[in-house]
Length: 257
Image (tube, rainbow, N blue to C red):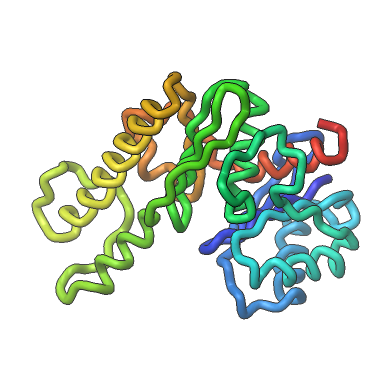
């Protein structure tokens, strides 16, 4: 089985694959204070609770946008799974031509998303990832990764509104019944949910215009279920696209994909 780990700014999302199928997945808070042993115990306990043992892990692949946590998870992998993880970087053969000015600045999660999506569709793509930041990636018909857009994430916007105002409450990120809020909480929810849906649709429309061809619009990420139902442009939702991208890159790099 393959252990795939995606270290994000808010969460460490990981799962195990068997024959390209995601069998189990988990989400942990990103915590820079945790040691490799603490992460190791968490991983082992959750893995065993699913009926699996560390000895069944035959490979590990790691994506990280938190450089300070990368060596901690690498050490955890070596100590508890006896596997040196493959770390996603622009040096891997992704099947894409990277036209980003500095590919080293490209988040490895965005790279994994784009690689697996292009391998599946072979069409122009716009990939939206609703995480701590909301990112948009553009891929051409020929597999050229052009770049994209980075916007503050929905959670960041909600936290900033609460932190920077004296009287506005912190609210749950759920759809209000109406656009016109009848109280403060629903008014904030309306601004966040419908406002971000509008942001998504406007950016996608402008990206489509620059690509010149109708692109397939795929959405993923921890907050995708909040915004996707309100968007007019999102065509497909895959909450596990990044983990599937890691599995794809592992097979491709080893010559089995």
